[in-house]
Image (tube, rainbow, N blue to C red; front, top):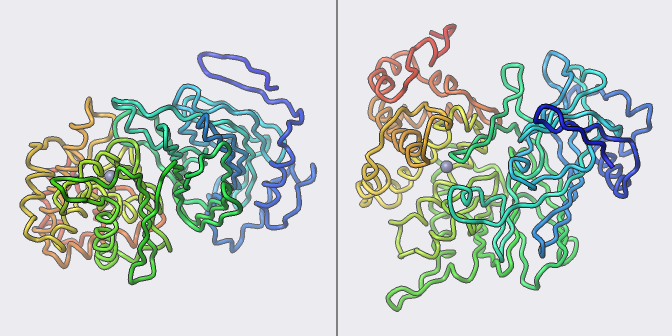
Length: 507
Ligand SMILES: [Zn+2]
């Protein structure tokens, strides 16, 4: 058992090297995460391995065995993270982002090892700082082993309900932002933020995820919705491989049903809904799943044409028992209320939120950004992508979109605000999303369609697989375009100084 002492409000734990029942499993996972396939001997465990030359894989390789009890909606997890230091300087500690620990009882850590040996750590809110006995030199890698229990909370009303992607209803268990992740490295530092109820705060580098999910006490009609390559190993056990992904999210549902469609480009779209996604209005049967499939068939190829090809074999949409929607890589949630209130046709939130979450596959999943400090980079672009979709497929409803989605809220505020500046989610959305789409549309008018779409593609190409700062977006503007967009930038941005936007060296 861990010896726990409390110091100055933080939980500081010194772990004992005593064996625990699942150590063998953890050892096996660690071994499977190494190229040699051999379990580390104590001597090997003491030194990190440094043969990183030519390894093109992401700096983070995550393996996890997740045992879910569907009756209690809890999960026991054995996880290994192989982390490579690809920076010039050595690291004397590793900071993990543990989103699940922001919730009371959400995360209970049972064991933590570095290279198979117990390690010191501090867990404070979502920050888990692991001290390294020896610094991790540049070009070297190490393995962090974790054993923990997750207990998501029931999805309730109020602001917290928007975090239903780590929560459950009677019929659904959603696991998003639930596995500890090695924080992003930006500007020679860990980029990790305090969680709050408005917007998002995660900043993630891409990783490879190899996960086995086993469900106990599974109801007969249980289905798993998961991104990547899913291989069933039994009725309630699956292997999931998701490569080059900022996150890993799954959903389990009792009575969750998949509707499937293969797009012309070979991508398989799966929409997972419950029975209540089929509704009857004025004697007409409306099928929300069919509608979302159809609009995905419209939206995904459009965004491929405008931005870049979609980079996965599958795209999964899940009816979430929580409000609004939420993007992950290869899997998104669309709020159940948008399905049950579906009134047919494209002019509704079922259409717009589905399209919005699809657009996040480029603006977030491909080009990452700091969602706390620069949320406009993905949210304004995802929201403007809704307009691009309406413009291409339902041009008669362009004015409807501006009025329904933007003007009706009389948006105020600066686009380049961070999530901590707002008292309400509405004010945040108005400033960042809605003023954001106004700014993007004005930029398009300033420089013309061709240059505008070239700007989006250049930003995507420059930031693909990276975490972009706003300068990366603005620096795609040619010098003459900078002049043309000056008035727009001055109106919508708090920070519109050329030296800051374009970088002093480039100006
Ligand atoms: Zn969004």
